[in-house]
Image (cartoon, rainbow, N blue to C red; front, side, top):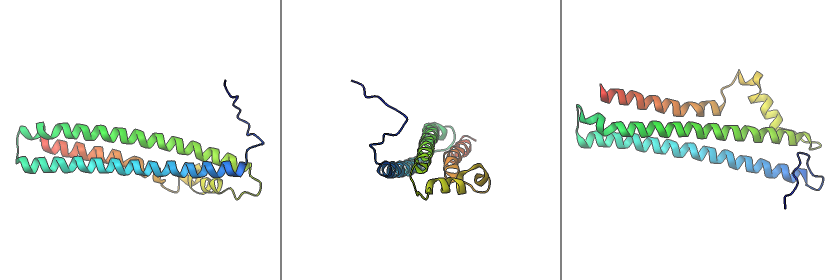
Length: 158
């Protein structure tokens, strides 16, 4: 048996309770996004630490050094690409949720419409030109780390 779904909200649902649940759930999602970024930073730190340790401990130079560190640079770059994709997915999902929350606020009589006001002040096209969003800065982290892998890799090869 399939339950019929509708885009129209049911009158039997407490709109404020649904809004509260959705807002809290969106915050949990944002927290998971931050935790994911911390994990990727930790993984990349460990890779750079391992490269430094192996380079120092092996006391290698010449042709053997790139053979030892090359795979680690490749793994680190791959980790950064996955990290970037993860950030993008979270960003799209959280943006969608904010759109839903703003639509829900319009249905709540007497609502202060906090998410609508926040979007207007910080994320609307007019406001976005004046400010740098956190998600934009976060998006640059994997790119910067990939640049570090390339720079260090080139230094080890040449």
